[in-house]
Length: 281
Image 1 (cartoon, rainbow, N blue to C red):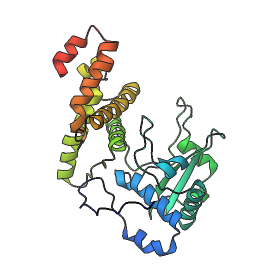
Image 2: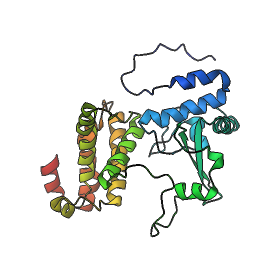
Image 3: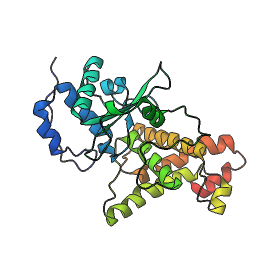
């Protein structure tokens, strides 16, 4: 059975990734597997506005599609077999178009991270030492010891920026909506209004009351962040199930607040639930 005829392209205004002309020039030299894994990696890095960080993608996800928080597939993957994916990634590394690092702390479950290799980027992944690879992606490292980041950024973000970034990534991964650009003043203002402010509103639901009252600027709570990321995913799912349109994080604030009140406020703080509904809903 043949696939149905493609209906034609819509002019993209969102949910699209820019394709560098360098890649088009390289196509004649690339095998299908190499081209597919490169395009898939581009979609899940540059497509989300992530030009610097390594992205952990499993062979299963390369084959069948990335998984969301609930285990559902966010896309259809490359459709390649696992041997073809491995060969494509190796060819891309050898050509120098991607970088790969590995977390080998658990020999039975090695995890790899990938990124597109920029001109001013790291050397090819095969020249990286195992020690550096393990430091960067050691998910089980001892957090009581200070480990120097082997790939330091020029500017370190403050805690709030880090939390905002994590929430943006979660929303983008759950909805496949790219993180907005912030190259101009207008773009930064728009991103702040439609992305940062509503996402922080959702996080504030979990933030300890004493921190909000004292306007604590540092020491934000990691546990609250994890709950927020889960709530963002839950809100997106509920809106999808109700066939509601999601354009930006501002679209999910009311649903997220409602889920919080039902799932957390009433369950964990019954004596405060009435006050919560009166204040937020």
